[in-house]
Image (tube, rainbow, N blue to C red; front, side, top):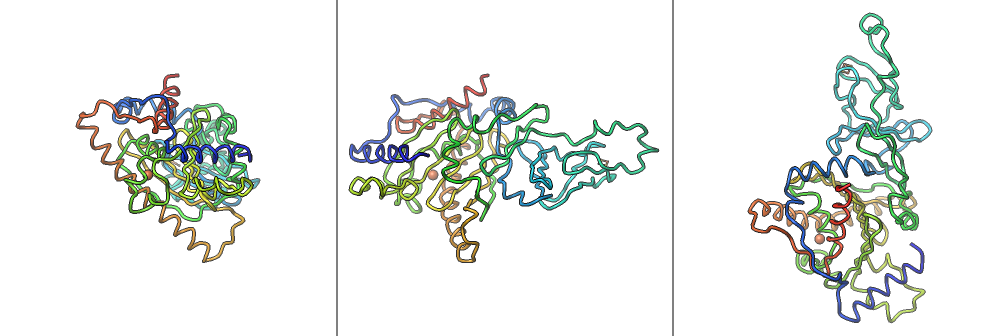
Amino acid sequence: MDRQTEITLIKEIIGLAQQKSAFLDDTIAHSPISRYSSPERFERERAMLFRRKPVIAAQSSELEGPRSFVTRDYLGLPLLLTRDDEGKVSAFLNVCRHRGARLEREKAGCKRVFTCPYHAWSWTNHGELRAVPQEAQGFPDLPRAERGLRRLPCTEAHGFVWIIANPDAAEIPDIDAWLGGLAGDFDWIGLADHRIAAIEEVHVAANWKVLVEGGLEAYHFRVAHKNTIGPYFPDNLSTYTMFGPHLRAILPRNAMPDLRDTPEENWQIRRDANILYALTPTTQMLVQQDHVMWFHFEPLSEAATHVRMATLVPRSAPQTEEMQAHWEKNQKITVTALMEDFELGEEIQAGFASRGNPSHLFGRFEGALNRFNIAVEEIIAN
Ligand code: FES
Ligand SMILES: [Fe+2]
C-alpha cells in the first residue's frame, strides 16, 4: 500500500465519521439461501472454483528448511507438500502409485524419500519413483517414469504455498496477477517474511460463505461482539475496495476518526485500523498492529467447513518467551471473537432447513457481502 492510498483510506473513514454515515452501496441486495444450502451448488463451487483457482495450501513456515514436508486433506484431496534441498516447494497427491495406499501418514516432518506403508514402494521429494521391492520378478519392464507421484501445480508467493487443487491442471497462474492488485499491499506488510506463532483448528457446521461473510461488515460488531471486541470499534463503520474477486476492508478502531485533529504525517493505518483481506475463495487475513491473523477456510460440504486460525508474526520479531506470550494472548482474543461469529454461523446454517427465508438481505452498508457473492457467481458461471 502506498502512502497516498493509506492517507486516502484514513480520510474516507474520517469523512464518514464526520457525516455520521456508514459506507453505502446504492441498493440493498438479496442472496438466495440455495447458495449456502444446496449440495448441487456446492459441487459446482468445487468444480469451478476450489479445483480451478489458486488456493493457499500452507503457510511457508509450515515447510521450514530443506526436506521438510506436510500432509493434509484439503478440498477433498490428500496432499503431500515437500520442500527440496534447493528450497523449492512441490505438491503431490499423497496417494501411492502401486495400489493407492496413503503414502505418508505423518502430519509433518523432514524426509527426502517417502516409503509406502503397504509394500514399501518409495518416491523422492521430487515425486520420482525410487524403489520397487522385488521389481524384476513382479513388475518386469515397469514404466517408472509413468509412476511418479501425481503432481499438482504449485508455487510459493507472499509467504504461502499456492496450488491448483487438481492433478489434471497444467499450471498455476501468476499469483500477483490472480491477486488483482493486492500484491503491493502484501509487499508493504512484508507477508513473505512472516511465520506462524500460534495456530488452532476448528470444525464449523456452516457453509464456507456464511463464515466469509461474517468477516466483511462492522454492522454486527457492537451487537454480536458486545462483550469482547465490539467496544473497541466505532458502530458500523468500515469501507471496502474490490480487487478482482478479492477485497480489502478497512475496519477502524475508535481512535481513527480523531486523527483529523493530528497532522497527516503522523497517520498510520495499521495503528488505528484492522485491515481485512478476503481472498476468494478460502483465505482471509486480518492485518493488525504488529501481526497478521490468517483464517483459512476449507469447505467440506455445503454445510461444513474446517477452519485454521493462525497468528502470523514477522520473522524479525524477537523470539522470546515474553513475545510468545504476547502472540498467544492476541490469538486468544481473536479466536474468542471468531467463535462468536462461528456460533452465529452454525445457527444460520441450521435455519436454512426451515426454508422460512427464501433469501438473505444485505443492507446498503453490507455491500461487501454482495460484491463477494457476485464475484463467486461470476467464477462459477464460466
Ligand atoms: S500400495 Fe503402496 S506399495 Fe503397495
Ligand atoms: Fe464478527
